[in-house]
Amino acid sequence: MKVALITGITGQDGSYLAELLLEKGYMVHGVKRRASSFNTQRIDHIYQDQHEKHVNFKLHYGDLTDSTNIIRIIQEVQPDEIYNLGAMSHVKVSFDSPEYVANVDGIGTLRILEAIRILGLMDKTRVYQASTSELYGGLAENKNEKGFYDENSPFYPRSPYGVAKIYAYWITKNYREAYNMYACNGILFNHESPRRGETFVTRKITMATAAIAKGKQDCLYLGNLNSQRDWGHAKDYVEAMWRILQQDIAEDYVIATGVTTYIRDFVIMAFAEVGVELLFEGENENETAKVSACNNPLYQIEIDKVIVRVDPEYYRPTEVDLLIGDPTKSKTQLGWKPQYDLNALVKEMVESDLKLY
Ligand code: NDP
Ligand code: GDR
Image (cartoon, rainbow, N blue to C red; front, side):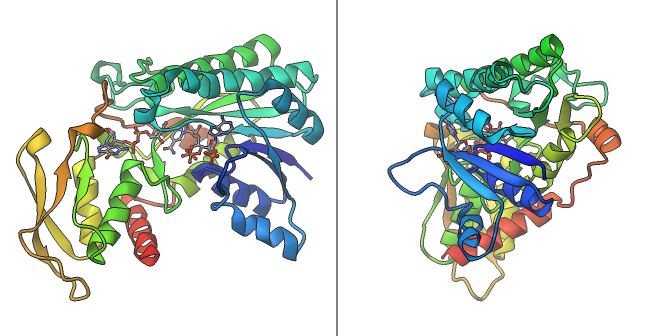
């Protein structure tokens, strides 16, 4: 039986990856942080199963800022594969706590790689590092000739999060080259799901769509509506993570859909799911969206009511304007193909949030 260790198991990706690896017959270990309130909602269903039937699943308390803890867990678990998904993953928040983010998202990766070296597991343990499209920074001149970011595009991170993740990217590559370790970067573009954290833009939009439709919220306040993101479904993306660690040779891969969409259009798509048509007017901080039609008799939403406003509070000091990834290498070498398109993703997220209300 293969043994996997997942950091960030309580997060969006960690929970889907744990399910996938259990399905594949792995023994799955996860690192969770001690918190003053419960932080295991996304994996409680797996944990509960453990009491009712035999499930190969075990959680360990730990933190990526704590080397001795990381070494001890890896020594105990002796993993065949480590998926390092733990991170302070919110780009805007990283401007408020840059040093902490450098410690967790940057040096945290080094702690894992060093633990493997110290424990002499270099020939046994394969490492997946959760790298990100934030490394590219959205600079137009750095796209390839087809107009996408690929594995060879230059990096220009635009946030403390991106800068911390670029350290993690390079230290992973360096340990692969210096010590012949099987260590890979998955450069993943944005991926979402009903389990997405509530303060990321897609989930914020789908939750507000449901709340407004059910009369529980008046207005949705957002930041920059003019940025564009290449959005996929987290379920598809954890499958790519696993494939990256099953190859003969360790390499880095871009995981993306190759389609990019404005934030504004995501808002339109989400409200269309509840039968609300929106009309956007104005520019930048004066931009609003009002209801131009409501085609669903279940929801009484006033026509002409403004239900989306821009609040500059959500702007970032430096923004990544446009992301679009080229998944050619992952499609050809990994045989990876996403099952979801954006319409299916938005539909699933809105339906799930409607159930919450
Ligand atoms: P989430 O924010 O949902 O999950 C992050 C996880 O990291 C949580 O389990 C969190 O624990 C844990 N964590 C945070 N700080 C620490 C710490 N100091 N020590 C140990 N664990 C910690 O992120 P996602 O699941 O969306 O993303 C997974 C990884 O992929 C992250 O590294 C992210 O940066 C990266 N990524 C994500 C993309 C996306 O679009 N989702 C795209 C590209 C990369 P807790 O629950 O206690 O907070
Ligand atoms: P991102 O995701 O920064 O791309 O990082 P996020 O959903 O936070 O922002 C996407 C874009 O939407 C704009 N935006 C807003 N964002 C948030 N969070 N809240 C708002 O109210 C809002 N209004 C507009 C942002 O300015 C931005 O342009 C995500 C994270 O998962 C990272 O960990 C990961 O590495 C990258 O995706 C790839």
